[in-house]
Image 1: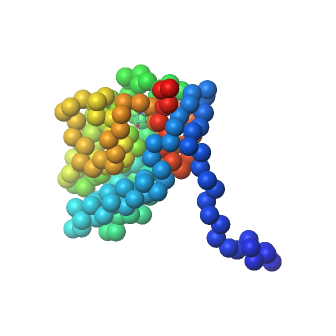
Image 2: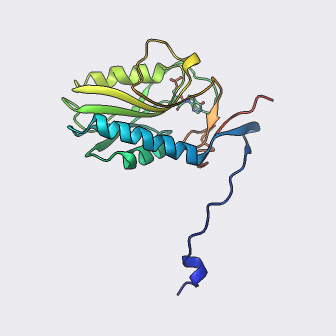
Image 3: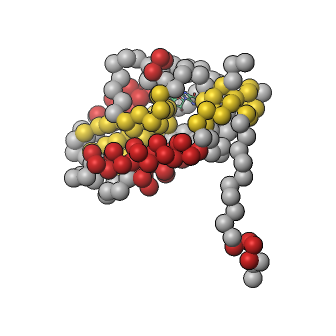
Length: 195
Ligand code: IMP
């Protein structure tokens, strides 16, 4: 039988305002509370926009797994989920400029309302590649819900339907986003500290 104190809710441990990953320093940029607030707003908008259909969310592995779980819970209408995986940055902070599909979707997307759920749009190359790939399945509609967008780094022609936060063109980690596979488990989002 556990002691009563073990059954009581305990507050989450305080998070650090600065972290060092792979020798680089990052400072907290978006708190977990702020992220949750914004994801809830996005979920409410998506709920309204898809009220009369059953969208299929296509989550982009690995980085979007945490955001997808929260966004999906914030959507209050029927929806489905599938996953796609593209080649990533590897251990670098700068895109190699080459995109490959490592895992394609399993679901039949023909005539479906498809919503790509992405953690971050940087140069936009991955998103352009993915939109092209998914269009080949002849979906009824294809939209994008990205948590983060670096507008100064992205091709201006790329349409992003739902954007959580517009951020500067600096490397970010946490809340699913990694640096050399590390830091995905941080609840807050941290940005490279240039000082
Ligand atoms: P893009 O093709 O340059 O738009 O980059 C898209 C992918 O690169 C994202 O799905 C992320 O996996 C990764 N990425 C881009 N910027 C960052 C960043 O600041 N931190 C972590 N990963 C990033």
